[in-house]
Image 1 (cartoon, one colour):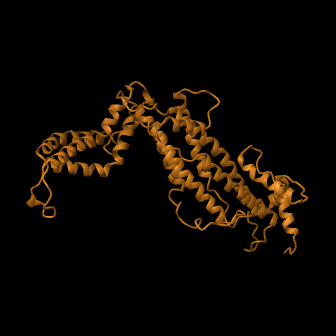
Image 2 (spheres, rainbow, N blue to C red):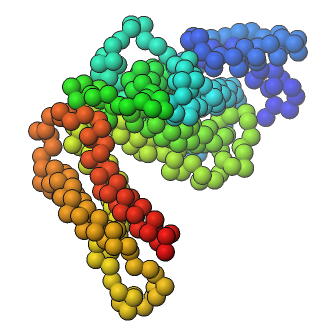
Image 3 (cartoon, rainbow, N blue to C red):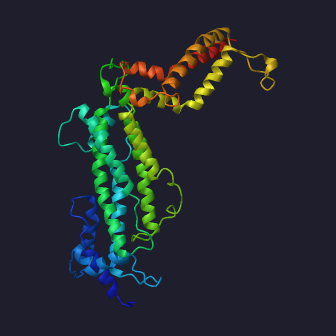
Amino acid sequence: MVQDGSLEVGLRSTIQGMTISERDTPLEELSDQGEADNEDEGSVIQTTSTEEVDSDDDRERGRRGGSGKKDGISPIPNPDDLSHCRQLGDLAIRGFQDLNEKYNRIVDTDDGANISVQRIRSIAPAIDYSQGQHFNRLRSRLLPMLKQQVVKVPLLPEPDESPVEAARKLKLIIEVQAELSTTIGQTRYAINALRPAPLGRYGHPPDDRHWGQLKRFRLSGLNGIFEFYVLDTCLRNLFYRTTSEIRLRRLTNRPADEYDAREYFAKEGSVDMTLEKIDELIRCLEGSELDLLQDDWSKGKEALDNDFETLYSLAFPTTHSEQPNRPNKKPPSQRATQLAKLALPVAKLSRMFINKLSRRGGMDTKGLPQFTEMCSVDLVTLCKLTREVLKKCWSSHVQHQCRL
């Protein structure tokens, strides 16, 4: 063990000479800052390349067994290798922080200012694509590429791996960060380009029955899913979680934080949930309109069942004697009962129609066309038909009770 300051000088010399990446990214700023600090202290440093740090002996040791264990005993790691790993860990943490700052969520509104901010904080393609080209590029290239890159984010070194193997994995994570920055920026731009134009306070949706795959019904939800779920809920927490793991495994010069050991990011920061939300975006682009209809219907399945019970109770109210637990409940108004009786068959037919077209009902949706000749207003109305009927019935009942 080295007792004097020669080890510190040696570690500085090793860190100073490393070139992590030749790409012009913000990740290199940390290395530049380290060079300036060392120059201020008057240290005489001999620069070396990454290839020199990863010597032939180190590469050979990595090929032979990763951790370099012999007879079950772990050898004392080379201090130069440890400093190399920790510098890479510092750069990886800095990279995740940069990604979270650059691509934090922008509130999903139709306000022109927010739409402009999204454009500014995105990456435009070199070619001026049409909406159809943005649609196909997003579906077939950008989102699948984003999934591939997300899977690589948490591939951190294991505790029993050699410093050489640990450094190799950290370098891969830093490379993935640069790729993610480009893919996220291009994805945000494409989704923003596909975003339907704001209608304004008194605007009416256009008749888009002949717009094919570019109807408002299909495209209006893309921005919310991407900004709130993919970026804010999933990727942000995935980056936080990976940063915490780097600190907990002591692959950085920074101490672990008290929040690092918590499971706060266990679900939201998981790869599986992130991939699930990206798949939801892909499904919005690839699924048929009838698929999307039944998806909306299934999301409120439990609430929908409760709605039918409420609608039935309005149509066929019970007497006070049949409700011993609610003796003070007022019966529904006659108008509400009449409306409920008229609406109940329509609501049942609507639910039957959707269930019949669903996969659960035996319909093979793979053979259905991607889009119908219904406009977006009709499709949205079909999604919300039962809820709208129920809301009108309840409105009539509440108004009647207020007049009593």
